[in-house]
Image (tube, rainbow, N blue to C red):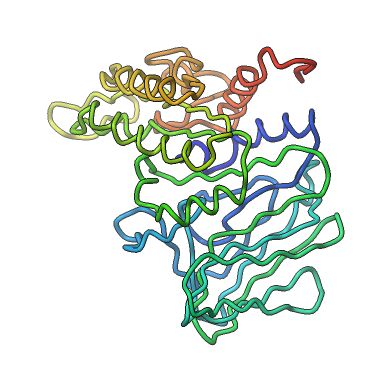
Length: 358
């Protein structure tokens, strides 16, 4: 999804509730590099060197012409031996504390360098990425089920290109991969190299895929709805074709009211209340998403309706405690937690032998 998912507040609630009910299978796939602001995983501690990695995702300043973004739609690379990245399992959370396997996802090619991998205080291990034939590579490490710190560092003898790592446990439970990009639209997935994305997705072998987009596209006034619908249909079909046995859900946009601009073009005074009106494109976009979901055998969850419908964001921003952010687009921590609970209730409604947690 987009920024609603990238901060891992909404998704954390859903993940924790599922893992509390069915078991903690591990944190899942994570991008341990320096992409966009607010990139986060609430059950892992992510740290990395500043200005030593080159990050890539679909944007004007960070895009790749070859589309090598991978599963999460983001990748990062470096040939600088001073670059480093660390992933540490949870220190305080009841979830994400234990890991028994670490699998690296990377790109092999003939000019690639080596990557040093150090787990805890053990001896560093070399991952060789040089290959005559370019293509996706994987290296898996088995560790004792418990808390761990994984450190990545280029050897400096060539460029390493990384997509992420999957952290799991060899126990029954839920694994939930959270992958969000600030400002993203669903159609951005069409710029991801399809063979690489497909192989990564098949390797993760999901039982359920959730695509959560639309809030950003609600502001694209010059984009005809029928053109938007055709693009997202292509994105959904591509996912369905890769893993046809997986269930799927589309999550629609949050309510995003449109601000009324002053006639003189000046900013609104601090002590004067802003004026808003319902965004005309929002219900059209939701209807298009719903049609695509139904045509492709996916469920649909209307986030804006769950918030209370059009202009509900105004109530969320001015509630106590405050649930909506002051940009009238994003939510506060309390807001994301409430929305996560609502989605979880909808997801599990009617599930046999399941006792909903309070």
